[in-house]
Length: 145
Image (tube, rainbow, N blue to C red; front, side, top):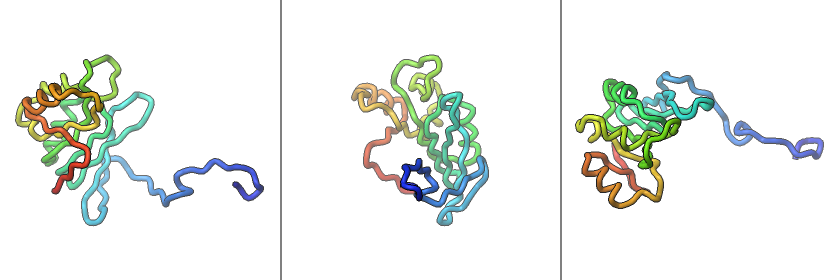
């Protein structure tokens, strides 16, 4: 309730100290260099990925972009956690399709961990992805860097 007894709409800053971050600027969190970068998700919404120490990239929700993947690798990325959809690519899709990602060269594929895929992905689809050289993020899996 607000001071006058009416209900108020609360925002994030009512619960936490919010500090806006600039895109492509590097910040230090607990001694780790962190950079956020824009990704293309849906045309009318901003979306961002995060890069840790230029070595670990998390794309969040993004469409496929070989240029973006190669740019991360050129900056020193050793591993890229990339969202994926195993559904057939459709125009206007908001996640990278597996069919697109599998066109990458094997040396790039081997640096990608596929994530954010549907629970309904079949064992055969997962096996095929692994046979192509991808790793698949698993619920509860821990990565050490």
